Length: 74
Image (cartoon, rainbow, N blue to C red; front, side, top):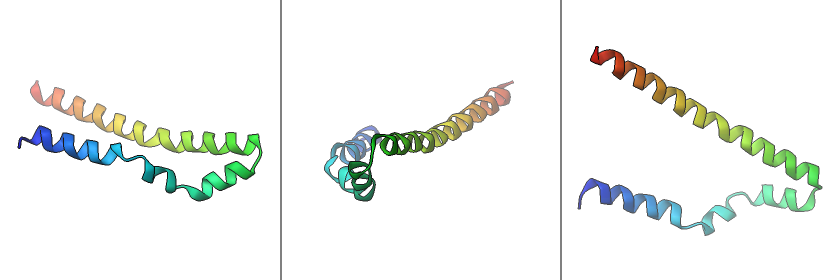
């Protein structure tokens, strides 16, 4: 089996089963269901805020890798 198929199999196994993802945040779900709309919006904004930084860090890392590889060719 080639590496491509191994990575594809791992990707499908990890991201195909969504039933487990619902059970991982039972406390957040309970708080939001029993709270008001502004509390739910605040939790959603907090999740979005926390989600942005890993993507920014990975983007900066790839940018510096790109610049390093481009400079090494010259």
